[in-house]
Every structure is written in structure tokens, then in C-alpha cells.
Length: 316
Ligand SMILES: NC(=O)C1=CN([C@@H]2O[C@H](COP(=O)(O)OP(=O)(O)OC[C@H]3O[C@@H](n4cnc5c(N)ncnc54)[C@H](O)[C@@H]3O)[C@@H](O)[C@H]2O)C=CC1
Ligand SMILES: O=C(CO)COP(=O)(O)O
Image (cartoon, rainbow, N blue to C red; front, side, top):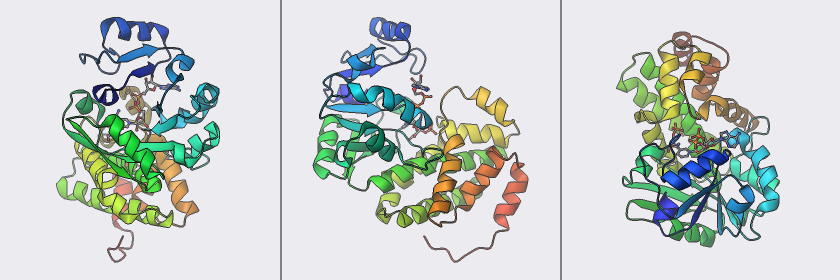
């Protein structure tokens, strides 16, 4: 939507040919954005080669844990000098790799041709063209500037950053903290508790980022604090809503069934915790989310354990 509004021709790949036909004919994506008329510059196709052909930017926005398999199939079709742009906010299970690391590995492209677009960008609000900002990150500032120019519109304000590590971590960990805040919400806890989780969640994210060589300032920006606030306060957030349902007492299976779209934090909480352990960084909120979501620990028990952990001096 943003790229089309910024003047780009957009070729949208989907798995189902019949949905692609419906989008081209009706100018609406009934499954994901019902009621939103898509710009004429967007055409849908079920043929990845057609979608990838001649693309200046190849935007990758599938659920994180499906990236490796999908990109392996698409790699031979990529345009020779295309810049691969990740909107995905997850950490790969098993490898604990960030999305840009998976992209450079699977597509065999240098980091200078991999960019990340992230920030407080709840899809339904973007589709409604409500004012928003984002970070476009690439190790090569000129590539970040090219992407910035390609996606700036009167309602969408991209800022450039060369700290890809920090921007990706901010986007991935905020989904885990969003689950935690949702769980607190579902348990009926108030704004003090949620503000504490947001603040200490940002501290946890920043500690991990510093250990991985990120710029600490990234986490007080749109990719960190900005996305954390949007996710932890919006009912549009799948991670927040997923957590709320768990906090209300729904089982994991019931919650998964009720969540029609991707809640990245459900899988990424384990790979984020793995990443923390690989870097010797304590991630207490992430650990608590894993215990609730994957080990079946009752939220009230997990909360009591979290609150009884030794409180270290408040530092990043
Ligand atoms: N929805 C949002 O508000 C935002 C989402 N993102 C990120 O975008 C990424 C994709 O998530 P969403 O688009 O929200 O998820 P989604 O649940 O809406 O699905 C995204 C698309 O991927 C397709 N898909 C699902 N499984 C697939 C597979 N195995 N292979 C190929 N395609 C598959 C779906 O059919 C759908 O078209 C996530 O990493 C998310 O964090 C980033 C910013 C905002
Ligand atoms: O990343 C997002 C907003 O920036 C979307 O959040 P959810 O994946 O929690 O819906």
C-alpha cells in the first residue's frame, strides 16, 4: 500500500491463484484487508517469478519461521541487483538467526543488498493511511536512503538507520513483550503492571542488543520503544491479543485457533531466549513468556516467580 502510494509499481505474490484473481478483479484483499481498496499500482500473482521479475526491491513479508523455505524456492528467480527488504519481526528457531542473516545466507547476497523496514506499523492503520513512521535500515546508508525515497508518502515517514541488528531485535523482541503485556491484560492487571513490563522489556531488549553490537539509541527509537508502545497498547496487535486470551485462561490450542493471523512472539519467544543464552544475557520476561506459552505454567505462578527474582540495580 505504502510503496504503491509512493509511486512504485507493486507485484504482490500470494499462494492461491484464485485469491490473486479476486484481488486483481475486485481491488480488495478479502482475507486480510477487507473493505480496503488497493491502489491500482498493485497487481497480484500466484507466480513468484512474475512477482520477482525486474524488482528494484523484493519485499519479504511472510511469517518468520517460513522464510528459509520460501526464500530457497524464490532465490533463483530474484532480479540480479534487487535489494531484499525484510518486514519480518522474528528470530529463526534452531539457528537464532535474525531475518536479514537468513536472507544473506539463503539468497547468497551481501548485507549491502538487504534492508529492514520496521517500527510502529500496525497493518490496518497503515492501510487506512493513518500517519505513521518507520525505520528503514541497511548497513549501506545509501541503500537505506533509496528505500526511504521509495516509500515516503504524506502519511508514512521513514527514517534511515544503519543499525540493522538493533532494528531487527527491536521488532522481534517487542512481539514477546507484547505477549507478556497481553497476558497481564488478560489477568486483569492494571497500567502500573503493564508499564513495568514495557519498561523492563525494553531494558531486556537493549541488554541483548548491546551484547550483539547494536546501537543503544536504536531502542529508544521507532524500532524499539515506538513499536513496543504500538504493540503493547493496541487491540490490533495479534501478539497482544494472543497474550490477552492466554491471560484470560484460554489454553494455547484455543488461543491459536482464535488467532487467525500470525502472532510471531509465540514461536520467537523461544528463539529470542536462545539468542539471549548464546550471548549470556538474562531475559527474565522472555523466559517467563516461554514458561507460560510453551511449558504450560499458569500465568499467576509465573508472575509470582518473576516478581520474586532478585531485583538488580535498574540499568540497561
Ligand atoms: N500485520 C502487521 O500489522 C505487521 C506485520 N509485520 C510482520 O510481517 C510478517 C508477516 O506477518 P503478517 O503479514 O502479519 O502475517 P499474516 O498472518 O497476515 O500472513 C502473512 C502472509 O503470509 C502468508 N503465509 C502464511 N504462511 C505462509 C507460508 N508458509 N508460506 C508462504 N506464505 C505464507 C499468508 O497467507 C499471508 O498472505 C511478520 O513477521 C510480522 O511481524 C510487520 C509489521 C506489521
Ligand atoms: O509489528 C506490528 C506493529 O508494528 C504488528 O504487531 P502484531 O504482529 O503484534 O500484530
